[in-house]
Image 1 (cartoon, rainbow, N blue to C red):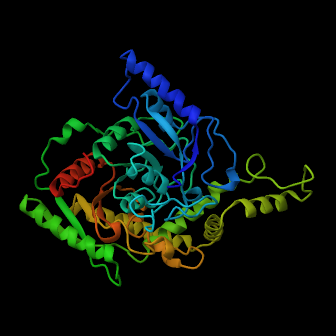
Image 2: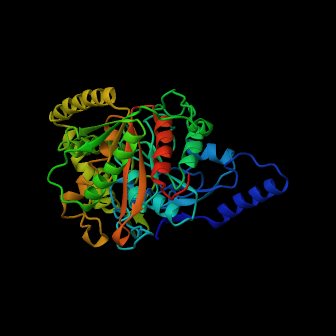
Image 3: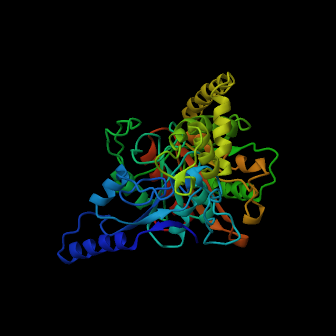
Length: 448
């Protein structure tokens, strides 16, 4: 599957031996003791390689653990390794890297999605129970959709980002992938803890108690996305068929159902790529190859070039094409007044957010549009359509909403069908609880 970037056998063996010792002496630590998991390779693990699938971080070993790792180690979980991804999490197909692209276990001819393609591929192939990635503009929900599993993007700031390589600091968040919503809920309960090292952490404790799932969703309000124009996507046709059935069931159960239109549909990808590229331009400036990465040498001596020329030479060689594109876009918009135009659009989006969640508690959206769905159709160098595959997912990141991808089934050629449910900020537990009910309603066979 090409899902792993690094796998340290001795590291995994030592963790497993410690677990066997605890289990024989009947001293299990927690519910997660002995449970295996993987991390996207932009999340640090002490003394293990942290490359973000880029040459500019080649052979770099992290000197510290991410807050996520510290919590799971205390609970006895077993980390298998670092997973493949798009370079610095920039991409939607897990192909923007100097390594082999990740394959989709459902169908090798089907794109796996990105940028957390390795995370979802390892879960759907039953290698581990859950995986942790990052979500900047749909990076966990898109591959979860393509692999037919659950992908959860929480509200910004409720999980500590300490140890995560920043791409877009104001929209980056840890994302969880699993076949079980209950595992995601238990994991969310563990990770929702304060860490003074993360300045973006929001001191808001959310009650993720699984025992509270046994409640009623009576008279909840659902808004379904309609009004999509100029789209010939088979996936969207399947989405409308599926949500029609869902709305029918919800009405019969006493819920209120309404329709909405995607706000500022045309501008959403532009807003996202401007914000993320400007922040990436700033965040990636630290990777200048002065201490880590691949260096240019000549007869065991560093090339005699001016400092700026040497830095440019190293970055030009080590950074991939997509990363260089984003840096150039960020450089352009960080020095122009057109950023004010996008700031005004952001203000309008926040007004739209207030209006939507006055009328509805949950929004039902498609997760993915059929743009270059097959591997053979993905042409990054020439097609601008690759950048519009995020148009249904970036909405949650830009205005800080919690969102979850729920798979339904696969159809012809193992093409997945599903949708995402979006909830207001810090309404994460109700979102997970609602997802359990919908999963049971449609009898989706992926585990609770």
